[in-house]
Amino acid sequence: MNSKQKTELTIRNDYLAFGKPSFTAAEINAVSGALQSGWVGMGPETLSFEKELAEYVGANHLVAVNSCTSALFLSLLVSGIGEGDEVICPSLTWCSTANAAMYLGAVPVFCDVNRDTLCATPADIKARLSPRTKAVIVVHFGGLAADIDAIRRILPPGVALIEDAAHAIGARYADGSRVGSNGNLVCFSFYANKNLSTGEGGAIAVGSDEAIDRLRSLCHLGLSSDAWTRFRKPSANVRVGPAELGYKMNFTDLQAVIGRAQLARQEEMGKVRSDVAARYADMLAKLIPDIQVQQGIGLSHHARHLFPILLPLERLDVSRDEVLGLLRARNIGAAIHYPPLHEMSLYDQQATTLPNTDYIAERNITLPISANMTVTDAEYVMEHLAEILS
Ligand SMILES: *Cc1c(COP(=O)(O)O)cnc(C)c1O
Image 1 (cartoon, rainbow, N blue to C red):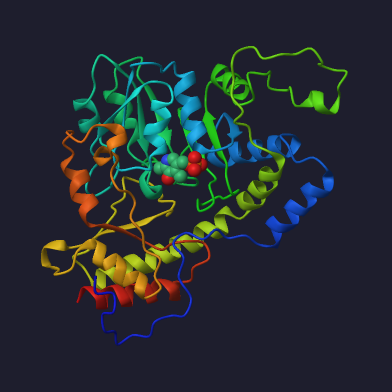
Image 2 (image 1 turned 90 degrees about the vertical axis):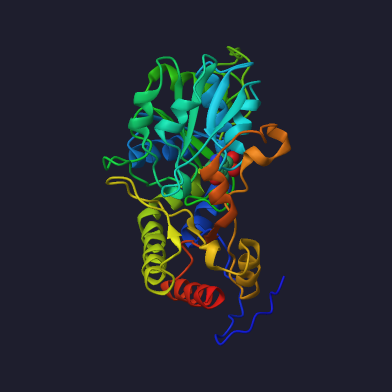
């Protein structure tokens, strides 16, 4: 690979990281406060975080858990998914989406995505339905809400619809309502580089009263939802045991104080992401108009977790991987989201035909985007990308 391409432009000294989290004195002081309080497990801060987050996303109910992977697993579990059931999900996603089904003995069935939105479509999901289909997991790719209403309409009764909203906190559906507000099981991630970061963490938003009670119990060993209070008031509840076999997938107050501080900064951080994305889009249209960017759906609001572009490979004499290497040589932390799952041996589905996913997988690059970046950083990326591709 020729990563020593000549450049007329100056190369920055520091590496522009792909998705660096933004932590301020607010998060640092919050952690210090939690440590000083002596209570770092699941407790009152977790309940406050859940309440504030439910309000923010417009959910009836919400439970915080230890990751989005767990959130997806628990959502499938409460939807009754088990051995041999088929769960349709995109191949163009992080492995957690499909693995959540496999933990339950279910089989992920990969669907294709639209080339413009990078999200799953009703038509392609419909073509992959079988009598064994028990659930569909839709990914809001990069922070763009997929057309959930249209997908719901093509699903037979009894097929669960779960949203992988790992990228999509703060995003809005085509009708302008917030992702997480529609009553579906909607799973969020607070992993290190996600738009709201607690290091590790996740949450499930849901409409139904029964689902939330079961989820609260399942993520805490099958104990009743207020079991944590017994640590503080030992006399209240000493003999309570698990109602069913649950898991240890609960959130903690140490994470919750970070989450509350991050939630209070979502508008500010979202604005930075939007400004960076707007500058990217603007400069792409002027400098490299044959690069394809992700297209919106209706009145959707994009949370700008990722900024994916599709390279015009047909006119380039370099491959996508070479472009990636050249960007990195110029201290630009570009990445690939994602190597498609259907090509990986773990899933044993290499025979599945997904023409749009293959098309995207050959030419996609995600440009750095984070709440730490400036519009000047975005201009730096675009100037160098334009030079590399010229
Ligand atoms: C990050 C991510 C997950 C998993 O989130 P964790 O909180 O790390 O478990 C799931 N799906 C997608 C699309 C992701 O990007």
